Image (cartoon, rainbow, N blue to C red; front, side):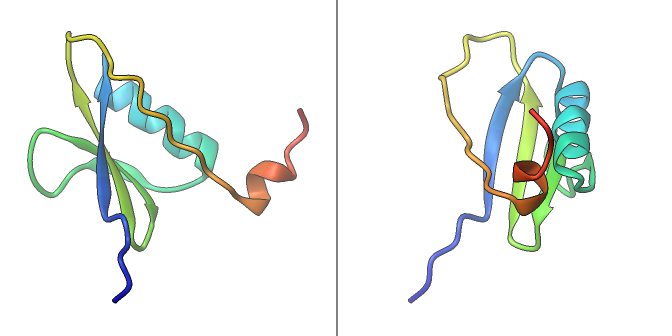
Length: 75
């Protein structure tokens, strides 16, 4: 059985601004999620990052992306 990560919830102070910034950096689509109070970043056909607004402290989650596009960008 193959297991894939389907989605992750990402806490933010401004879900729209955070999702838009990440989507622009990755060159992927973003917009309101199909369900719930989220703004989604569609990383690929199998992974969505769902941003949600919160006033609580962030848990310190780390997301690492590997991409030929990103690795070819100048530092």
